Image (tube, rainbow, N blue to C red; front, side):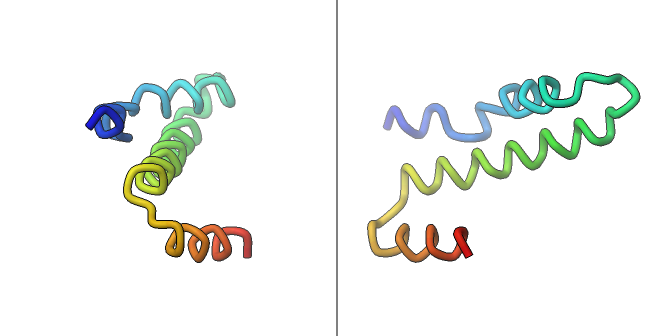
Length: 67
């Protein structure tokens, strides 16, 4: 479906640009790469949450994240 077309693997540049916006100093490229990976990981979890989530499971997952 349409939702799968914008899955996280298609949003790598978005993750990098978020990291670049947070830390644009060239001296901190390692930090920027790590931050970009973390952004992509969070976007992947968000996409899975949105596309494959079932209400009962999502409530448990949300509760675990809040803890």
